[in-house]
Length: 151
Image (cartoon, rainbow, N blue to C red; front, side, top):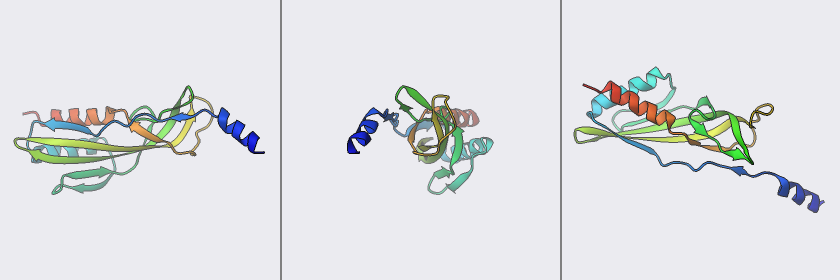
């Protein structure tokens, strides 16, 4: 019995998770108040649900957002097949003044909600895999903020 179980486990293809990138950091060439308002406006335009917003500490956290795997998240592969489906993503933004400019850091947390190997079959909820950011959300958000703070 044990030999059969081990042979089945030995033939299973391993899940290869993507390497998590470091937090996204950017410098904005405008003061804290102007940058803060631009960030809040950019998040509102994207219609992201916010869990916490604290201007005095410079923290904004989003609630879970469902997105297609591959847009904001890379959830790795099982064997040779990329995972496809849906991911739950959350972002936490830290804003702090830096002289005449402002520093922005964006942390992300992502995991699968429903996935499948390649384009085969129905979406499965189990097991849940952790995902890594593609950097697309962060780059687009920083571009929107920089556009909004232009003189």
